[in-house]
Length: 135
Image 1 (cartoon, rainbow, N blue to C red):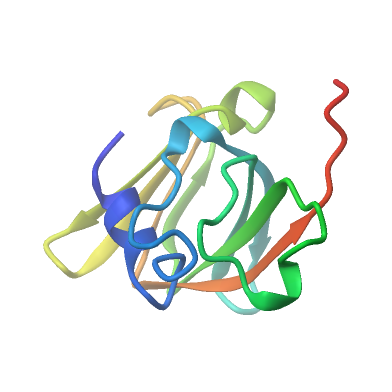
Image 2: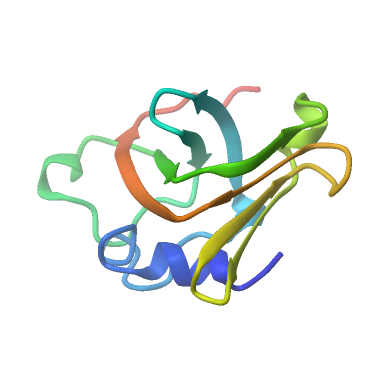
């Protein structure tokens, strides 16, 4: 995994304020949502983590929340290639900035999952909630 994931999420416009500049690493985030929107030429990825923000908004405090999810929208997508999508591909994720021109995203093992390039990304949504501890 590249350090670009942490660099992106540590930005204040992403999760930087919630996590005091130290967002959760990929190994504690699960990819649970993958949506391709050909109308908007975008891909949206949703992640969930039990690594709760250290600076939660006031409305979350005292509610017993123990899980956090966030959605990243990648826009200006090109080179989208879907070879396979399933549980195995959802477990592997990599994001790399390429020469400041685009973001390269790989889901699954390179050559067997999904790959694309995006000209930009943004945090679309973030929310906390109470999740069950049972499997």
